[in-house]
Length: 129
Image 1 (cartoon, helix red, strand yellow):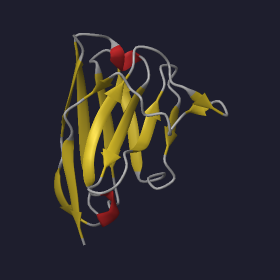
Image 2 (cartoon, one colour; image 1 turned 180 degrees about the horizontal axis):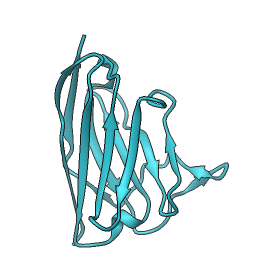
Image 3 (cartoon, helix red, strand yellow; image 1 turned 120 degrees about the vertical axis):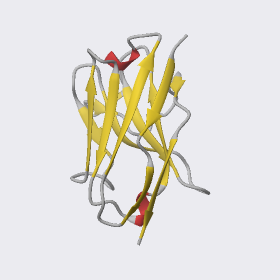
């Protein structure tokens, strides 16, 4: 049974930083398509970073240049370094993954396909102005 567990959320002031971590249990799912997905109250889920098994990463325009995603397949972990945080980054952040490679759009991991097989429980990020 695959389990994903996030940690690292919290409350920060605008301009601050947080680092989220996701650990995978029960599978090497971290080696395949993984994503950080966020959802704010009243809003739809939004992928902020999608990481494919070949190392390619696609970021949402809203976080490009501020967020850095990475994975460590030896430790079965996924990370999201979030810098220059803005109040609009406030959301529940989820780690999600699949047993196969990412769906590609124009050769890049898709940010719009969110039908992942595995999801963590989420970690809350709150950014105050």
